[in-house]
Image 1 (cartoon, one colour):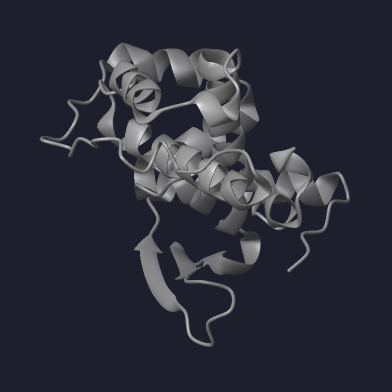
Image 2 (tube, rainbow, N blue to C red):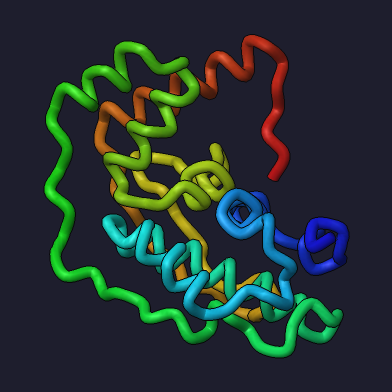
Length: 187
């Protein structure tokens, strides 16, 4: 039901992906329960099972809480059971994975996936930034000009990210391939 509402339809691709993850885990873990019977202890147990990756668990539970909040005025419960979940803070940075993981990714992934991974690794930007905001129009002369902020705001924050020459070469190759196939980027 949640996927059929206007608010869901208006989400960006990245936000919709996150919301879909939350809906999937709710279905997988609590789907046998009626929404009105789900309690904070159910949500806490679900959160605790994901706690080995605090940022992922916290982001997911923001979405889970949003889904429950959406359901309240529609009669799917009297309270948001995810609102009372004890979150965990990120205590320390994750250690980088072994170089073999990167070698496997670059050696075995489809080319378009490897390119996205390289841009994300070089810039430190998240999935939404790389997939939705990284365009030919804003990645010129070895600098990515990234505009961040809510779309309804008049002003947006601007971040300038210097691109490694290898990343600029990846961009140039992708641009040349798109032009050769007659694909024109819409700005």
